[in-house]
Structure formats: structure tokens, C-alpha cells
Image 1: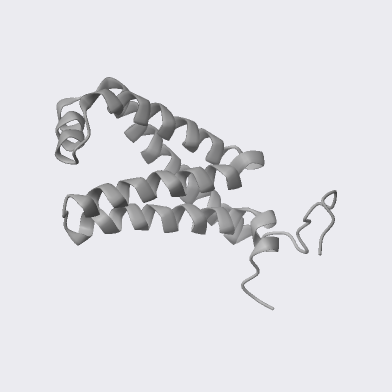
Image 2: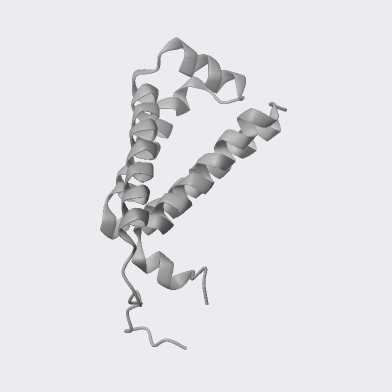
Length: 138
């Protein structure tokens, strides 16, 4: 068992191709999520309609946008990326639950699941601390 003062150190560096693939995927994900969060701040008609269709009031749109932007920024900062991935997983889980509750199609549900998987895949590719915690090879 690890003492509380020990730091998990990666046993090896991340391969260059994996590192850049992870950075690119994280960047693309970040751009999309920041755009989505920003759209919630300005509340265009499609955002309002989509939120109301999911059963939420218009008053939650701006706070959701702020939460999404904050979680995304935390994810994009290397030092806090793992915390950001955990927070984004919760956000996507809420989105998936909302789509399931209203009986949306598989695409809408899978979209949230796919973003959660992409979040962790991109982070795994670029983050040696995560690779040390979850080794895929023995």
C-alpha cells in the first residue's frame, strides 16, 4: 500500500505519437466543449429549445454553460487534467441520463457516452500519471 506522502510517478514516458494524438484529441474536444459552453451563455434559440425539450427550464442554461466551460478549462490544463476528466464524466453522465429520461434515440445517448470515452482516451494518450494508474500492459 502506498503511503499518503508518496507520489505516483510514471515508469516510462509517453510515446511521442501517443502524446501528440492525445493532445490533438484533447484540443479538438476542448474546442467543441468551449463552443458548446459559450453557446449556452448566449442562449440562441436552438439551445433554448433543446433544453426545454429535455425538461429543464431556461434558467439552467447559463449555469450549465459556466459549469461546462469551467470543467473543460480544468481538463485542458495539464496539471488538473485528471480532475477535469472526472468532472466532465459527471457532466456527460447527466446529459446521457437526460436523453434517456425523455426517450431520445440511440444517437443522442451514444453522443454523450462517446464524448466521455473520448475524454478519457485522449487523456490516457497524453498523461503519464494516468498510464501509471491504469497500465494496459503488464
